[in-house]
Every structure is written in structure tokens, then in C-alpha cells.
Image 1 (cartoon, rainbow, N blue to C red):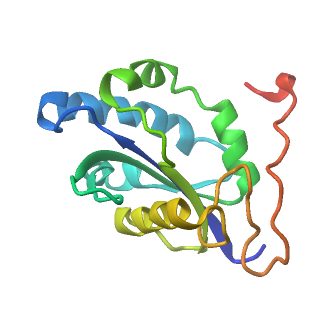
Image 2 (cartoon, rainbow, N blue to C red; image 1 turned 90 degrees about the vertical axis):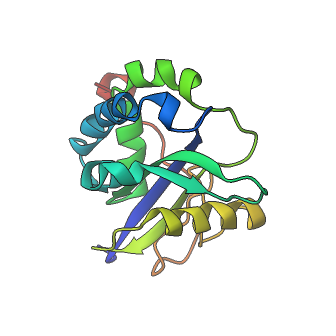
Length: 170
């Protein structure tokens, strides 16, 4: 145990201002994947579960206009736990509707970084990490699953873990 956990953020830009999106409908649908994730081995914390209203946030990621966004901000015990949860979670109904709600983007809207065990990142911290990743690429400050860095006490960047065998995915 290193005393660190893995923070993860995905930021999705909403197609329209939050009011026409029916926030109660969006919040209810966000709870579905959040519930599936919170039951996964290695899960530590989720912004949506802890503070549902905080999942709707306004970001300024390098452009003049502010972007209304939904923030999926979680903390995991390890990169391996996050990868396993992504493969096992069942948010399929939510994922089918994501194109109705969210704008596609050609720039990174997600980032990973290590936090001290017990730390709960907020949307502003997550925004800084995505901004850092966009400006500098994957570094120990902000990275992706394609080039995951070890916790600060470990010496080398690591490759993403191999997915579990198909028979292990539930």
C-alpha cells in the first residue's frame, strides 16, 4: 500500500443549457452508472454519490465560452481496480442516451492522477488536471489509462493492465 489512491475524471459537455435537459432526469440517469460503480471492488468514492448536485458544473477549458458539463469524478484503490470496474459496470442504458445529451469532442475530457488516501478531489481540481493533460500530454501530474503512471513513491510509468479474461467479466 502506497498511501495513494487513483482519482479519475470524465467531463462530458452538455448539448444545451442544463434547464432543457431536465436535471432531475439527468441526475436520475447519472445515479444508475454511479450505483453500478460503487459496488465494484476497489471503489473508494464518487462525487455523484457524495454530492449529486456537484455533478453538474461549468468549466472553462481553454476557450472563451463556458461549457456546462457533467463531471464523473471518482477515486479508486488502483489503476487495475478502475480498469476492472470499467469492464464490469452496467451503465448501458445511460451510455445509449449519451449522444442525446452530450457533445462529441476531439480533445481529452478525462484524466487520472494520484491523490493521498482519504483526499476527495473537487471539480476545480479535476478541471486543472484535464487542462494539464491537454497542455502537456500524459505526465505524473495527469495521465490516461494508455500511459498510467505509478503512485509517487514508485519509480517508473506503467503500461495499462491487461483486461481480465472474457470469462471473468460479469
